[in-house]
Length: 125
Image (cartoon, rainbow, N blue to C red; front, top):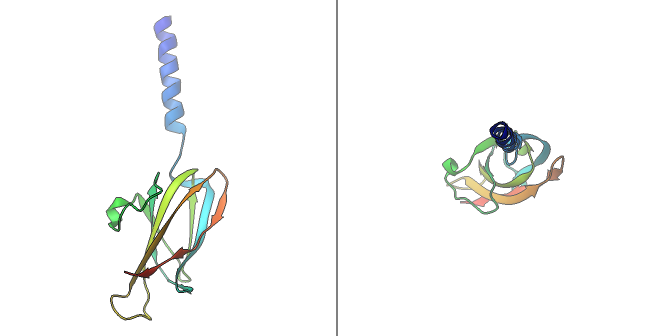
């Protein structure tokens, strides 16, 4: 009987850890904003997302967990679960001379069901 009780405790603890969705996309909280270079929206910029991070993880997109693409007006919206995240945006500003690429990022924490509005300022790389 004691073995059964211990087994049930272990199973319930494991299921509570597995069911807790933190630092993922798809939750009831959202962050949205616009990717901007000197107040100009950057169309179709990629916004890379790093879970459980408050510091810049680097410019290599492989360091990030997932990404979204901004729309033609530079707007992005990401549904999230509570947690800490770092966003890194990469886009092209066709009005500036080569190398055209603009980059920038920000870190934030979000609570369950919270809605944040954060524009991502980008600059020449």
